[in-house]
Image (tube, rainbow, N blue to C red; front, side):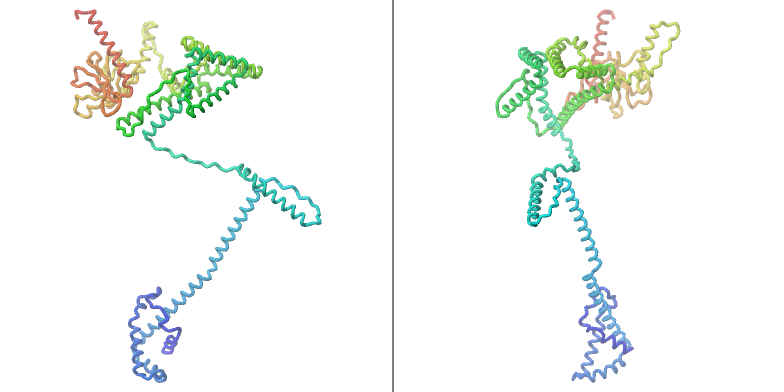
Length: 586
């Protein structure tokens, strides 16, 4: 055991050359406690120095084994622990050295980098080959070299250099134009949409109006020429046009007019004041844009712009739908005229010479524009009978009109034929059938009209309000919120004003309102909320049975409903006054 300890003691470098165990990552908690063994070894050295003050090595060496035998078990264990410490430190040191060597000579990483470099080189070679092939395909093939055995080698070298310079010059001069003809995929760019803004909306509408102003002025001048607004101007234009059409100069005349118009526009752009128009232009007052707008002004502004946009889009949709229905044989008798006209034009263009066809078309266009249109505009009855383009265009239906026709035909097919009962005449049976057919259309969602409002069968809605007007009844005499405002539909008959509440479940409900037109004392247009712009969307009706007027608000078609109710009310009042005049005793 002692021999083994001596071997361990004198193996490797000294202990001072190693790191402390606290810095070693592989040291345990028991191995990091260095105080006891260090102090013990220093005490052993001191005892040895005291015993050998002269420093003779022979005495110490001979006395060492004797001291080892005299040492206790605890001292020996501490000494073994110290040697184990040294062995662990040596192991850690060797591991660090091995790691450093592996990092310096990392063969695997070198192999991976080498493979990457090889792949890059292969990719570059492929790209270079593709570029060379494409250039060879784009450039014309060089002429074949004559296989002539030349005695002078310097002459061949000079020829090759001249050819290479020539090809290089050609490529530098025309290669850019060749590169422009290469096909490339189109880039799909998505335009960003601007958020909704009242200011931006009004500005776009004004821009549209300013942009369409030249076109509208041009169309207005053409209309003035056709209607002979200025007799002298129209007569001069008619003579010039017919002379050009007679000599076959219609196209040169229009081209000359276009050049003249551009020349005038150039002079106007340079500052010249040139104003020529058949119809005098009306200068519209331009309001400066307001920056600070109130809520009601912004709301009214948005409503005005939305109304203009709605009307404009409606007109454009009508034109497009009419053209579509003309070519899709929706109205066969109208499309048949176009079909025959195209066949006649096709046969005439095949048989007649083009000069004669152009002459005929030019003369017809001049007579139609200057004479026939003027007569038709002056005499509307003649236009309705004989103006074929006008008749075709006005009779072409739009998609909403087609939908209404289809619904009408379906409703007619669903009506069952009436059966004559008893010994009634044919005229009576026809009258009953008409009444049933008309009464069938006046059924509400809750049931027949006269049953819902407890009226006689003769009372039916007027043709103006067959489907009623959506509104809300505001009864200011009631205090409960459920009775104060009710949503529903308003009808007007010959003698009554009927309101059907949407919350009524039964056919005849107390929530429905029936007002006799004869009992109305006052009827006016009413504005429920004074904050909102405009004249309002309500109608107030005063009767003797109510303390405050009844208000029918939130009506989209308020003006139409007011006119219908007021007209029927005035008829009843006039009839009552006439009866009182004829029967003064009553």
